[in-house]
Image (tube, rainbow, N blue to C red):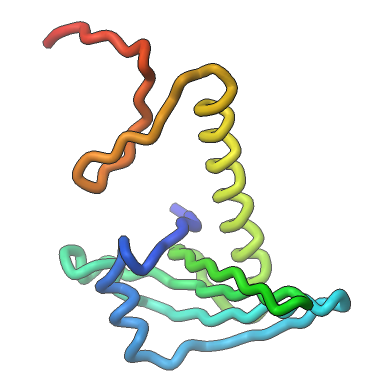
Length: 135
């Protein structure tokens, strides 16, 4: 199964600490408008210490606009990463985030009354009209 999923250091401490000890493969690209794309990618990184044998490829991306403003994103994937596809993987990862973010914002702000509900690091949608149907 191919996937591209966002990863943050606070949620994947083991993986990010593992990468701190490695030298990534890199690729940079500058757009005509001055935007700089910096890609660092890693292969076969353990996702976490609980599932040490499950390894992923990791793409770390920094975008710097012509004014110097930086944005940073990191994704895990089972797709093979190399210089020829880092840009496409980055675009797919950002598109997935945008779709999820806009969907949640619509559900939250357009009268559907959905909210985030975090419980022991699990993400759930909760609707205030939910009913308890018993066991």
